[in-house]
Length: 553
Ligand code: ATP
Ligand code: MG
Ligand code: MG
Image (tube, rainbow, N blue to C red; front, top):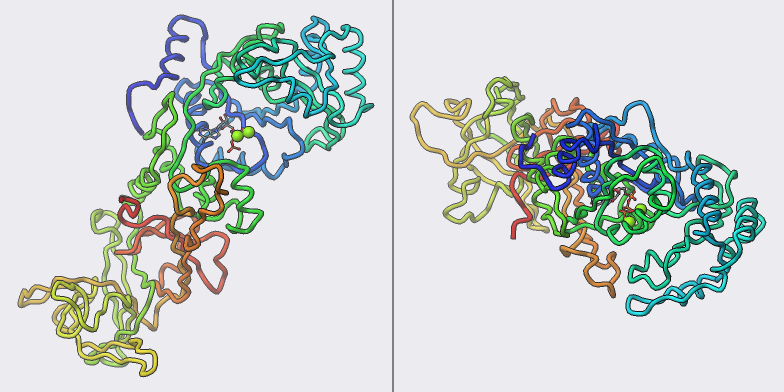
């Protein structure tokens, strides 16, 4: 794949190996199982698992499952599927933060015994008030100086379920005047009387993200804990937890810029809203920038890995154009995808001088630039379908397709000369086109060497595979649907992001195209079989991507 100079994280790791600080890096990808993974997660997966592959060292897949109100096993399963589909291997062990609930609880008891944590009974509103603001320091909670024994007793009773949700929390005792709000006695445990998808009703209290994350990293012996920039302000808390407690090691947290991609949103919460409100057909809707959506759309694992390598790693936020992602799938499919013909918006073409009962087979190249892929045959007969927009009643001079006075080449077939066309009297719609063919031009050239400039695609009417084609466009009308906090991102949804063509006609061999394999419909783009909407009776093709960058401004 790509060979560039080392990014800043790989440089740090290389230096740590060189100085002997670590024998090998141990990284982790820590998704919360509260939704499906998206292309932003792919960046983190390629980074963490990529470092593992390059160093032949472990990368843990760890489910950060400390918020049972939003987490479900179906998400665990989908995340595993997506990570392995992307080409990564987490080895023998799967990790779950919930596996450490017992240890994390013990660490909390230690903090209390050290006088570094206390049970607080301020309600949510008071808590906000006491916390202060960016410009004003916070105030100490009236519960801050409780005796250690009282804290231990209250915390144990919280764990036994004696108190209501929201009535008590455990807070780290750090510094209410810290300029970093994350250090103003952050909550480290809360009461939640919710069943957990793995630990059931064993726990009535759950540790908070920052506390759990630092401890899970240390318990697992992670060396470099890589996360996105919004956690930069949490790093002092991460370090405080690990410095204060006697943990097995102290991993180094390093932040990098998250992926922002134009014309999409990248938060599971927002993606979930789109699913729940039926703006899309599900997490795997081919328009969604989820891994499952991209897979169904026809993206390959290599194209996504190459994309992540291409965009690189930076310490500052930036935006990536959707066209960059599209280019990667084009680059991946162009050399490998077989070429085929499919008429998306068909109109009948009748060859008046072609014998009625005659049928023949013409030879087509599977990939014109790659002769090694060989050839195939296509049925040809008197009645064909061509693309409606390949015909014009009053063509301008430069029109290279069919119209009165024009001669064009049928791809791999014959030269045809316009004869006449029929129209529906009432609608004015053209209903069929008649032409004559030159029997001498079989294969696409004639003995007299005359020039025919235009070449159009076609399928034999009698043999055509009836199919449905889905054309996709961007999901949102604006580059950054989140830009204006006053306007709901859903207001920017593109209502025309999916076009359904129900009368498409494809070459018959496409009936057996396997799911997961893409073809290039000549002149149209790359297409694959939709794994969900296709039925025995009707194949549905998704347009993966157009032939050229349609995003360029
Ligand atoms: P979201 O806000 O979309 O729900 P998240 O950060 O809450 O994402 P997690 O499941 O907690 O999702 O993330 C797992 C890992 O993926 C984290 O290390 C997180 O930093 C990383 N990640 C999430 N979104 C992006 C992104 N857009 N670019 C790069 N990494 C990301
Ligand atoms: Mg999260
Ligand atoms: Mg988030």
